[in-house]
Image (cartoon, rainbow, N blue to C red; front, side, top):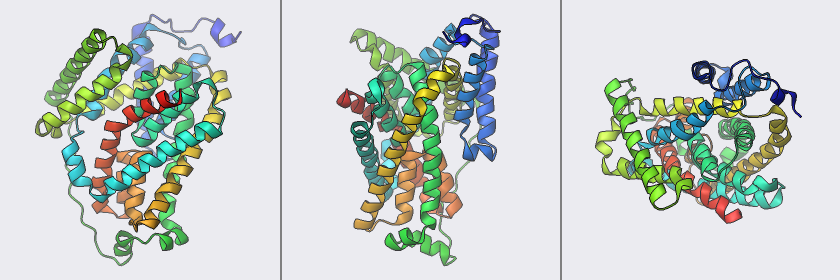
Length: 384
């Protein structure tokens, strides 16, 4: 028997305030690391998970607690709408242009890699779940990774190993996306007018972005709306006996609201920040519920599977870009919107001087948030 499981933790499982301090403290650690140079190498999510595992495996906090159940069962459903309130599909398609077409190719490339890898590699009994979760994560982002894992009923240990391995893969994917435009033979094979303009010293126009401000009127409205959406979802789930798909129902309801009231939601400020805070708290709770020995025994195989998906993804995107004469910068931004999310993709575009691609990259990333959960769940069902 694992010694860490037999000893009593320093903080009891019913000590709500102490465990709350620990979980939010780990979330703070993740955000702080993300703001530093080390966060570019190892995501704050990895540090949060690792901190949670360290505290529980060294008996500082418990492996199981009603507090963790509350975070996963209540706070995370509340976070989903706040991360999707900006998913106005009309605006997404109108502002993303041809980058959206490449993003759709990139999404299909992710699905291809996930399905091929499932049949080529031995992922064990959790293979279908991992395939669906990774598909959702590499088309959308962490919010979809989490939503798919709950919809397919992945255990805390399985989720922790999957996202721990995936975070390392995402870091390598980011490195590849940054490196590809600097590889001469790829640039020669897939020409880029955007990159040529930058090399010639011509400025590329970018829309000015207004900085978000944290407003209590906006945040309280977003939280109230999120509670309402979750309440309706729970009612529908119970009425139609489909409670296990509550996350999907929440996603559908939010997207409907985002497209019926786009003008009201586009100016909402602070909602996404609150959603990300709740997600990081959840990552801390997942880490706390994970045995280090179980994590290490499964993470490496999942890392190889994730890398296979990324390699297939990038290969297909680059081949399609070559065949259909897609600008290399467009291809990189579209691929990044899927693999590493809208915020990081925007940073890549800005760092390269591709300022006209910042908005399309963000729009494609938000579209990925809107569709990836459904695709991920469908992949799990297909492969089960």
